[in-house]
Image (tube, rainbow, N blue to C red; front, top):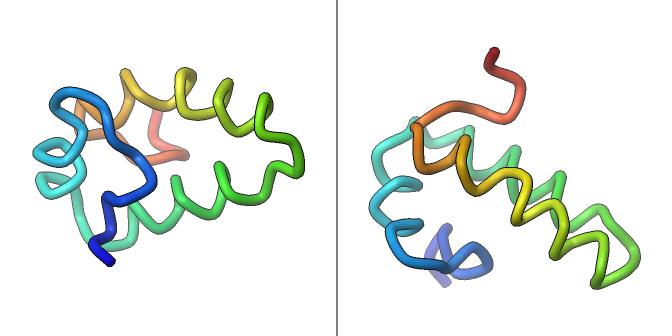
Length: 60
């Protein structure tokens, strides 16, 4: 499985490949840690703009 397999929307694969190796892992861990699917969906929506901008989970 590729590292972008769980985060797929238009432009997401390119954006995830553009950021450093540890950043997609941090996003994956944050999203996967949610117990409810609704929470996971909200986290994906929340993180999408940051991923597309090439920012890490904890970057300001």
